[in-house]
Amino acid sequence: MAEKLIIATRASQLALWQAYHIKERIEKSFPSVKVELNEITSKGDKIVDRPLALVGGKGHFTKELEDEMLAGHAHLAVHSLKDVPTSIPEGLELVAITKRQDQSDVFLSHQYETLEALPHGAVVGTTSLRRRMQILQKRPDLNIKDLRGNVNTRLRKLREGQYDAIILAYIGLYRLDLLKDIPYVEKLDFMIPPMGQAALGIEIVENNERVREIALSLNDEKSFLCTKLERDFVAKIGAGCSAPVAVNAVIEGQEMMIRAMIGYPDGTNILEASRSTQVASCENLGEALAQAMIDKGALEVLRVAETLAFKEEMPQRL
View 1 (cartoon, one colour):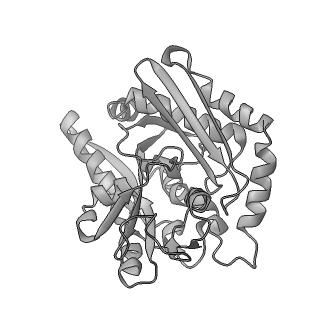
View 2 (view 1 turned 45 degrees about the vertical axis):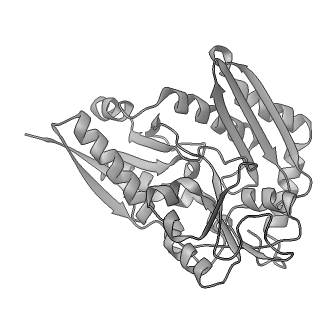
View 3 (view 1 turned 180 degrees about the vertical axis):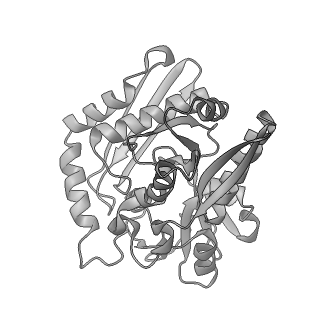
């Protein structure tokens, strides 16, 4: 008799792509396992008329899946790792990180070839305080407006001319084969990604050794290590998922390098720092970088950044 494994997933198009990708990998590696999907429309997907940070941040994209696992309705959840808060609920465990792919943020427009080509005051759409901060640091003359909805909704709003350009993660567009329909696409190499971008996090119910074995077959050690350092940094600095924080760790040869940026959502008061060491001794590198930035005043920058992000007189605050 075949074993049954239930994966909890959001019902969005990209989340389903990710869940089916993991389903195929598991069934190929474990032919005796039959994988089913438990599709959930999360609160973060339902509320699209307010900035994400005002409805609890990205944790809304994971909480319902975690509740399903804790209730015994799923063995495993597939998350975009960037959406997973650094604290995991008791009874669950983040055990595997898939091989990380292209982490770029990408500029999309129907009229303008590049970010630099945008005219003064052009309207740029993004939901992310991190992207807002980095775009406005480079182009303080732009008008950044909030952009909610699933990927197709965002692309429709761009096509309709509600925005001169929008900024999205490259990897989601690539996975859904949506780049071919957009006239102008530019990878923004200057932008530091968020914690965990372009990797999937596999979360399981604790104390199920068979599910753990299956989940670990999906793990990529280098991606696990890099994203652990990024998550350590965010946990130490105390930043929520929606804070204007960028952090990225990469392995180059035998060396681990991590860099980070925090600042105000309007692109001012930016703090940047980086650290590197041998991969063999990098275990505390994320926390060390966070402490270095705390010593430079990062906690006060984050405190003020949060108050700026939620000012009522700033309706386009994200």
